[in-house]
Length: 105
Image (cartoon, rainbow, N blue to C red):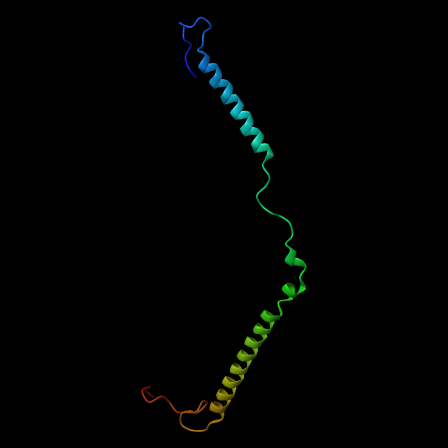
């Protein structure tokens, strides 16, 4: 704010009074605009929430089931191979009492 000019008989130059009035008007307009602002976030339930085909996600469930089936098939094949190795008789077979060639007796 400007200091009081003693040369002017009424104390302040006219420009200072006009500037303060403009500033008060700008502040009140700013406060009014703040009151009138609407929220910028849409908090309504989306329209897609009522669509059943999006809730059940059949394709995703089908893909997961297919993946589980592939894993089950691979596990079955591994178990068959392990069983065949266990049934095999010979020097390298599991369950035989032969030692590894590098191990001391």
